[in-house]
Image (tube, rainbow, N blue to C red; front, side, top):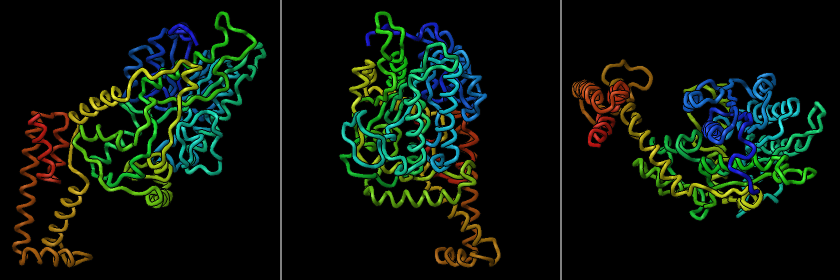
Length: 480
């Protein structure tokens, strides 16, 4: 295509489902920058890290649930183009919530399609996933000619539901509007690689949190395994170009032919396949977190992933509770990091004019700067092993020193007496340890009020529990 920078955007009304999210918010701002008359961010949330900025820039934030047809109709009425980004179940606990995954990804997409036909929305760009063709078997430099992965063989409901939804979207291409005005809906699908960038919500926060707690004990797969990533600005560019590829009123174009992108899927990425663990290594190193040296084969990791799948399936009624942590890994995630699968963006380049604007090196440098600043203003702390050592150790000491002989207390008392020889010494050590922790916590609170006032209370409670294990992180922050 040879179009102007704002072709099909200037003066038009856009709806971005999932518009308060990481990619959705970036897309909303880019559409405004290019001259859109109105941009609506349709999201189930009322607030997000980007919502205030979006409203200040003039984005119309429309709250609603994509599974509610009336909410969808309210958001899409009068729109010229829809970017359908909203989805559910990509990673973590969400992956096990089968009902909600199908509701959002399949039923929600059907509501979008129906509303487009009802209200004469001429363009629909659907954000899909690599998982519509990938299910655990190696793919090297794949392209859009690959057939869909069998629906009944997907390892998780997310990949299955996104595959069904994408096929629905592409089959709806060129369907006439219900008002029978002679016009029709044009659709296409963008299949992005794993997304990263400053503020990304799904992949990197979970990885960083696990690394901070020391809960990335091993790598998965061979060192030569490669996958794709895409920087957020590159994905936004691909989406904008896709919307232009659905234009049917380009001057000089044959009106009888469909737009070039109509009914088409496109893979997009940074174009630099890399091992996942090597990709995140610079980020973790910049935050002073370590990558493991040990490795698990894909088959071994799958056993572990299926164990967590079984455990979290039992916990299904409580998965939305805050006190249920994210699973360490699930089977579909094992395949994503442990099996080579990367794709060519040649079709997107030839038909849409897509070429990554931001290199992987530039994208990672910006992402590292974001995470370093985030670490600077948040509460830092030791790994889970220090927590277990301190909490279990102090708890055992207190039980042995002061509780009666009930339950496991005699065992705790026997262990402590082995080390300290008499109950008098046990009680004295318990009192001294408690006093030391209180003193360290008070010192941490006073110190934090000067160097990190926002987190002063957090530093007090963390140091009360962990003592020097916590205080050393605060002392390190004062040196910076």
